[in-house]
Image 1 (cartoon, helix red, strand yellow):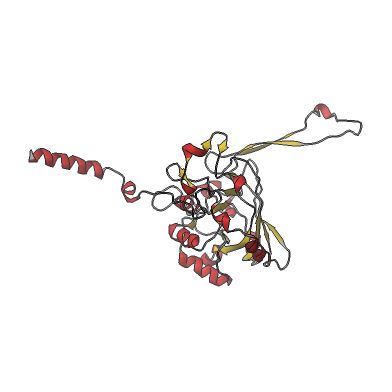
Image 2: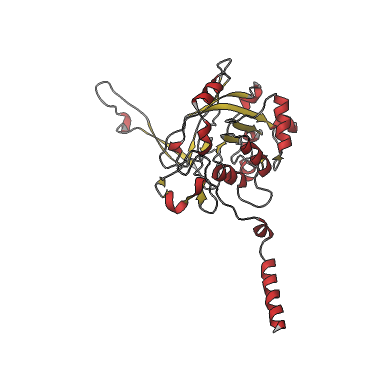
Length: 317
């Protein structure tokens, strides 16, 4: 009897040992309720108020504007399955014909593409934890093939806030931050000190890594690895009360994650804290002008039921 019990224990031990180490190390995760109530669908965007907007507008000193989006075409590298194709159509104008006595002609464009190509706003309904999304919303209750019934991008108010850009290339001393570099809290604090600014509640925080310089030169590397924040910095930024984070990479976090997880920073920021992700933000002109704080303005397309959308936010100095 004892022998059989020992054999059973040995078998269990061997079976447990065969489980990948990281699967044992990752603790169960739960999506907490929103601090803004059970019906909340906009997360950290609740921090955008008339008072916060007025305060942010006082940052404008010169009136200079900076487009932060990158141009999108079929050649722009995109995450895994995503693509973008634009077709120009001239309806009823075949053979060079026109309409009306005034010979009216026009161009129309048909886009077949993913909303997650190029500079984009990732909403809090985009990333979940085991099919549970922000504020405890279960996929089976709100996700359909025609879009989400909750947490859609159309619910997000205009994002008008103080923006800050952290030039990580200045810290690492080169035009492009080395791949797989994880930004620590100490790194972030060093750059903030160099720039003479501090992160405040309600900010949009962007990282400049120089990674956009790879587009068209080394697309494989651009998509395969990237520098960025890890979980330590994500927790620190979230506790500062920011409304959005992002930068000039396609995931806005170190990739691949060092512990084998899939996009843990995005999971934490979006699903747990309701903080938005802004990807492929072109901050190069801001860095050249040393415009490290500015008025950030975003009015995204209101695609009902989408969890992400192409954008071209504007910084005003």
